[in-house]
Amino acid sequence: MTAADYLTRLAVALPLMIAVLAGLWYAAKRGWIQPPGIAPSPLLRPIATLGLGPGSRLVVIEFDGRRLLIAASRSGVSLLDHSAR
Image 1 (cartoon, rainbow, N blue to C red):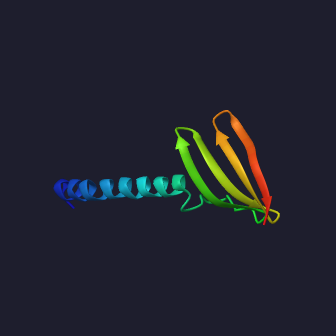
Image 2 (cartoon, rainbow, N blue to C red):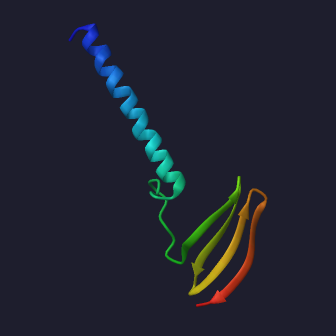
Image 3 (cartoon, helix red, strand yellow):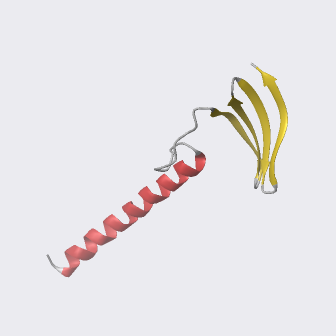
């Protein structure tokens, strides 16, 4: 293998690897995939999420047969409403 062949392969493989890693990071950040070692809780299930701005969102979760509306921000988490299903 010559140096030109090596550089050509590197020029093709490196951007592909970076694109795959960026795609995995984006999918994990959006919640489409779970990183290894983090198992979803059988008791707590997210139903819907609405981003309100940078660092704040509304989340509807189901816990023990009830739906809870939670506000999550950088300063903490607050329970806004709860209802039986």
